[in-house]
Length: 193
Length: 154
Image 1 (tube, chains in turn yellow, red):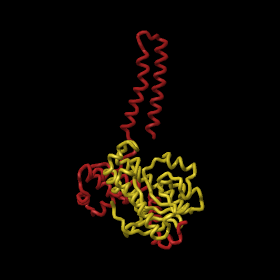
Image 2 (tube, chains in turn brown, yellow; image 1 turned 90 degrees about the vertical axis):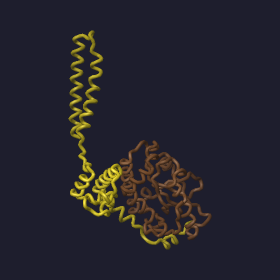
Image 3 (cartoon, each protein chain N blue to C red; image 1 turned 30 degrees about the horizontal axis):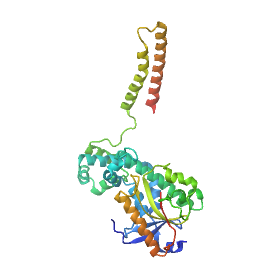
Image 4 (cartoon, chains in turn green, brown; image 1 turned 45 degrees about the horizontal axis):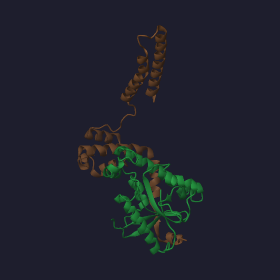
């Protein structure tokens, strides 16, 4: 279990997208994710550590060299979409964060129900990417990024680095309650890209 | 309702992400080359069980420089690439053309064409049938050579 003792919030897109910076590192989680996903040394070490998952067949049998390049290309593509959203603003429905984020859990009790056309994307894996960005949605189009991961397995429960992300979501939710940004009764959604 | 005003108030400022993201997009083309080289260098180091420090000494650069290279974020010079190639005994800027693959494809296609012809011709085959098979075979061979030329141009 990691020790997250200090939380700060940085702004990515005002009124729309924020990220948590843990333990005064000087870098928020959103920035960290894209730094790591463009860092060959980081990715090589990650895939070497998770070689069994990588080659177990969930995404097919993939060589480490190919996995690194695939991750970098997917991150560039995702980053491109996020830049467009950041620059066009949330007024444009086609370029809002809601088109990217999907609920982590299927829930009836949601701030903003996911439109039918998005459900297929959310659960049908039209785009089979292993990159995940985790966030808490506190309003219809306002998200706070808590972390992210490369998810090579079907579920989050049996891998330490993914369990760690679930823990961060809970901790940040409590932080937001402590800071009076949301209250205990607020409905918030745990989301993922 | 969430208190967005409070959220903006406690925010410590703008994330560095947007500037770095734009930089990555602008430099995408050369970063792509740098990343592919970094992958090859890292995998070779692992295979050879060679430390980064050792590589730095071999090519006469600082360990910090090697660190940048293996992250795939360095705009490498041809001189540095050549030094890395010599130190690791690998080719880091492979040509996209692979003649060996072209030859292999040709053999596969050639076999594919010959099979139906060889089993069809028997001692009972008439002269007319043989002529027909020969035309068919020649026709197929023409297709093979055409495909081979196209493939070679790709």
